[in-house]
Length: 217
Image 1: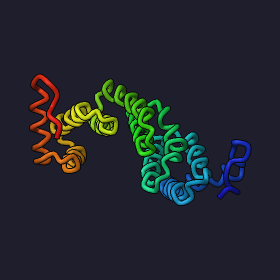
Image 2: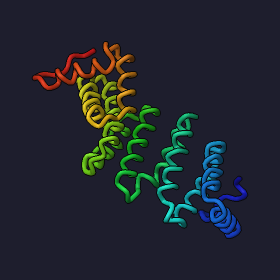
Image 3: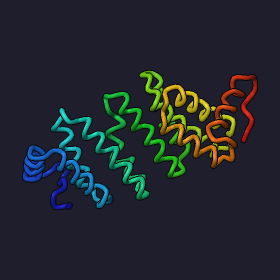
Image 4: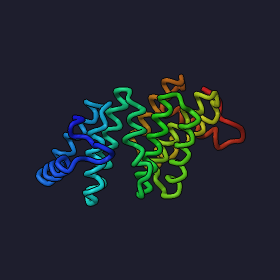
């Protein structure tokens, strides 16, 4: 693949022409091929260079390219390629002008750092994500970010703060019927030894409305 990669920081003219021709012929197939190459040859940055070139030269398809990058990030994480995911694929997304996309990328960047045990760095990214999501009213995004923040608090031994974050997630997810977040909380309750699954979170939410921190499970 390196034969088709950038030289001196720039793709060869022949490579650019081939990418343009392939994308004009079949945008979906071209993105799919690049995504597969990015995952199968994770250490090689050629697929990322192709993605960057096409995303910069097909502004009408920016959202499709961003979703592709998020998908590649998820696949790389499943393979334990956290540094490649965050340093290569998430770096540009974290600079997106779209606040919802930027917050989503910052949250994922924080999650990558959690997996790498960089908890302080992770919390910095998650707080940036949280601030954007609060500003734009992205409730589903808030749930994902607060869920991750709760894990950092738990890792740091700050159990009341962890529970408070997760209870907040429960309240939001229950209100907007966010099934994915509720399922994650139900699984988390089992892992924490919290009886009753979602009923356990309902009980803790009731206690949070009263003076004093919620009881620890």
